[in-house]
Amino acid sequence: MLDPVTVVVVINTTKAAAFEAFVAQIADWWPIKSFSLAEGKVSIDPQVGGKIVETAADGTEHVWGAITRFDVPNHISISWSVGKEATATDITVDFEDTDDGRTGVTLVHTGWEALGDEAATKRENYHKGWERILDESYAKFARAICPPPTPKANNV
Image (cartoon, rainbow, N blue to C red; front, side, top):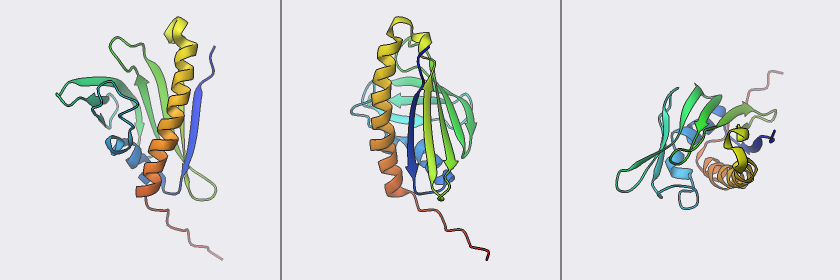
């Protein structure tokens, strides 16, 4: 059994803002030049059963996955299957308050065994890819556009 790929970033904002940036603004932060099928535009239909789709310049749609759980602003789960006839793996992204008032975003990618002989190689490629995507693209974007959390009043 292969270990999950786990990537964590911390954003100085609320869960709601971090979640909104991740889902609604994915087209603005996804590194399409490096991670795509057609260098198109990525979008998420924000509901259970909704699709993650890359739309190419010619209008061709490439489905990357389907939402299996959608809990605003805490959690999104995806059945991930990028490419024609790709075997699905599973992704969960959790948004949690940190002790210091920021938001921790944890992506966990599992289900590698479904990929058979290619599992170990694909897992390693995704591990490197998710680190770049989450840290260099999403976190950088979210840190630039998301407002800092409002300090909590101290009831002394």
